[in-house]
Amino acid sequence: MSYLQAIIMGILQGVTELFPISSLGHGVLFPALFGWHSMVKAQTANESYFLAFLVGLHVGTAIALLVYYRRTWAQVLGGAVSSVTERRIATPAQRLAWLIVIGTIPVGVIGLAFEHKLRVIFAKPLAASIFLMINGVILLLGEVIRRRTLMFNGRLTAPKGRHVRAGVAVSDEESGSTRSLEKVSLWRGLWIGCAQILALFAGISRSGMTMVAGITQGLDHEDSARFSFLLATPIILLAGLYKLPDLFGPNGDGVRGQCLVGAIAAGLAAFASVRFLVRWFETKTLWPFGVYCLILGLVCTIRFA
Image (tube, rainbow, N blue to C red; front, side, top):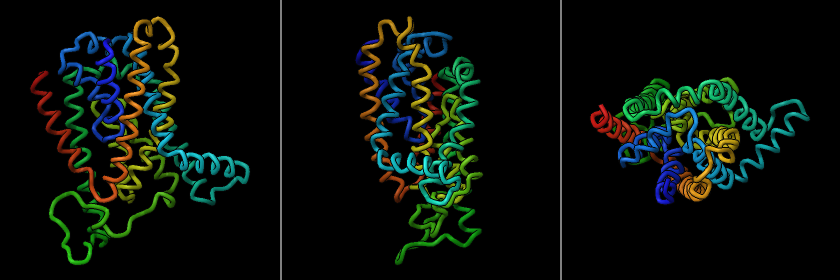
């Protein structure tokens, strides 16, 4: 692996891990499109240098998320400690702490058992292309469900002087009141967390699935995105730390320098991405990302069929 490839893969990881378009899917498709055949082959091997390289990308992405949400994480940790000592869930910080814990457990357990097997089976260009289209359908379907729910509950409104737009996507500005993250029940948090399991398939986005689960449970796009990024942080970090022996073992020989460069690129790209997406979801929806996944998935399916 060259240093240029490491930088490209790092930027790709940092962006697509947070954008609802699947980092694993893009990580499979782009090397195949660029003709990096050794990397494509290494992704589905039981043991390879690429698995060691992924350690750095995951850690770099997780560090970027920790830095961006450092104040929130300080409140969450404080809430977790106070909740345990007081034996209650009374404050928003305490509730958010337990939402993250409960939402992380399902994908953590399933990931430990099946992540490697699913990667070996499905981390192939054609499969990733098909799953990317499925990801796009789920994103758009989530917006349709949200719109119909808002209309059914009579909460679909428009800002003064404007009309509600036709179509499947409804911005938070047009949706009226929604459930806040601080009031989400633990059961709903568990459901949102379970949605991450789908991201074990290359082409299905972790952030996309949790955001769809969030908006269909009454959260607005902004809170869904924030909860998605907070949920992703421990999973991404633990995935990197869990595979750390691969980096310092034989699989890491010859790629440790590239891993460091890739991790820095991933961290910078992730920080820029989360900053952009937080602002994006203040007023916009998942619609463009769903269309993008459908188009790219279709093009790549034709290409690799």
